[in-house]
Structures are given as structure tokens and as C-alpha cells.
Length: 150
Image 1 (tube, one colour):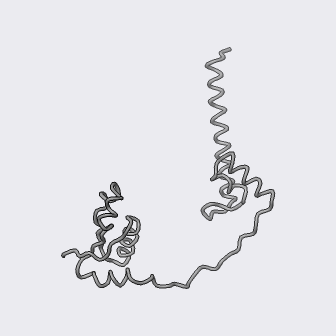
Image 2 (cartoon, rainbow, N blue to C red):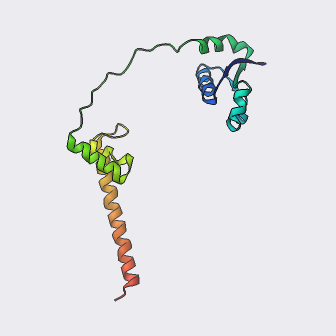
Image 3 (cartoon, rainbow, N blue to C red):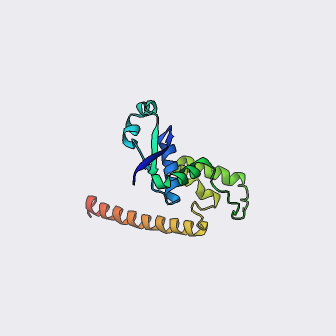
């Protein structure tokens, strides 16, 4: 099984995307000079880019896959419009995002990050907060016993 050069790419990410496309089609590609090109990227451009090689028997299929756009699939899930946020919820989301970090702003929107129902997330956070309060109270009581003995 001899490898032949199927294409050259300007950047490593282009070569990796093309290699992923070929892997999804069942073709085993090899991207040459990956480590050298990621360290000395200016020199790699002067050398002609990153080479994508495949087995000789897969060359025609590779060229066909890389030359055309992927097949169009018009089967999409139905679109469910999302209702706009009220000004109060928008302000609350901005406040949470600015104080607790960008990932916390979604708490005020009522929409879960991973399509989980918001009620489950909220109940989980309430349980975690209660557990944190109990553990914190126990730690404070133990510290009070050690530092302020009666």
C-alpha cells in the first residue's frame, strides 16, 4: 500500500478538516509534517503547506470527495421559536453574568444550557446550596469550639 499525495493545504486546520472528511467516508488519510508545521508554521508555508496522502486505491474517491461540496440534506428538525426575554429578566441575566461569571447569566433566562428543564437545574442548585450551608455551618461550629472553648 503506497501513499500518494492527494492534496496540499495552506494551514493545519484545513488539512485536519479534510482528513476528518475522508475518515468519515472510510478512507485512512495521513497528514504530513504536522509537528514540524505546528512549531515552524512560517517555514511550513514556504515548503508548500501540509500534504494530505492516501493509499493509491483510494485516490479517485479522495479527489471526488475533496473536489465537491458535501451532499445537501434538507431534513431538519422543526424550528421552535423562543420567546423574547422581558427587560427585567434581561437585566437580571446581565447582573448575574457580571457578578457570578458569564456562565451564570442563563439562570435568569429560564432556559437550560443543555436542553434540560429549568426546574431540574433550579432544584439541583437549591439542594447544592442547602448542602453547602449545612457543611459550612458544621465547619463554623467546629472552628468555634476549637477557638472559643467555654
